[in-house]
Length: 302
Image (cartoon, rainbow, N blue to C red):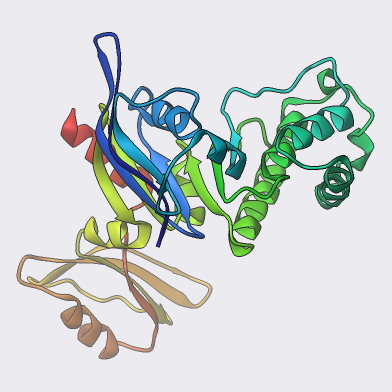
């Protein structure tokens, strides 16, 4: 069941059409990638979901019911443009935002202690925000986004400012939130993160939806009849009229090859040839990356 739906949403700013009949359906307890080039309309849709602005036409639903102003309390939003008050102390600010989201002071303090300890930021409580690095501020804002345990969480470029170690920490926390029942909309230009985290995606370009679906299914659809095979020993499979060998290397006692079938060939032919040549360790379709697909789809529409 979809936790959130947008149906045929259109939005104009003057003569500029920001969204043109865009629809998305975000399954419950899913990490949903909202993708697109700069200026595609992603931020406009996020602002509409958060009720910062309204659509010119179209409908939005949360848990099957039309979105209302009160539903903003059920949404957590980490914007790309960070919004912490530089002169306030970290702890005071985190407590302030928690109470804005309806938590009592006692409950807010209990949850803040949990998250500050979990992310190893207890020592920052009494520091002013301006004393923190960009990545440190990002951790604090992550906590204020998820503290009230919203049903729907929107992360807009959540890894900005993080080094690889802290980016990995936040990735793990996002997965942890999903395991605990959260539904997440994840907007990013980092396609590697999309492959690691997202279950489903929608790709918007020039205000329209141009690609949507399950990440693995999309990668299979865009596969180019290529296969990766790993075999024991120094094995060289020779190509023929039905398949060609694109790449081969031998290391650590294993041969790794990339093969591609022709118009008349199919995977079974490669598999039979390999079985006659030695012991197969693995045999898998070679799937294109989401980055490759993103570029191909967007360029085909420009």
